[in-house]
Image 1 (cartoon, rainbow, N blue to C red):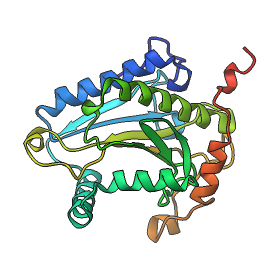
Image 2: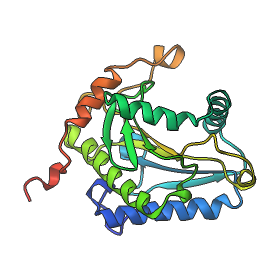
Image 3: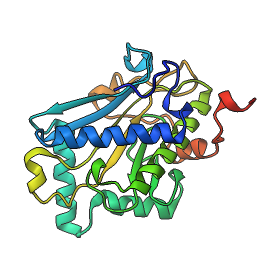
Length: 243
């Protein structure tokens, strides 16, 4: 799904109405495909560093007749947390991070972006709604507007970090669909993962190799350091500062 007719216009350089149109298209696809398929994976691979062969800014949508590994793991962990604590896990987590502030990158009335404490990529972030929302298609009109806004703010900060079109893989996770629409999925909380590879500059990336592949992931900077650096960046895109 292409984001814009212009091949050189990425999400952080698009207007809020244009980003809102992307959000609406995501929700429409999730609804349409979710009527038949248990899992609809919306994701974006941005930049050649993430294996993107088509330079025109776009995302992909894959629908499967089964729950993939990551979805199954999130389903089990969120179900267990709700059973044990009576509150959706990521809703509680968002409230805690909003209170602590130390790993917070950006926030508005409906959303917040944090560098999660378990992050393994240097500037990995997690985008979370403040209220209990299971799926993209459940977002209200105002929440879709505020989602467009916070996405733009985050992605501008990403681009400003090394003054480059910041590469990443991102994707949405929400409650399963298809036959799961008739089941109780209150344990789920909608969220988006952003996994950017850059570490020290526009050309120096992190590699998950050796010990990290065979034993345990290692961080090159703490989540708090990454969040503070992103938080301190301007929210005017570097390409527009001279305008």
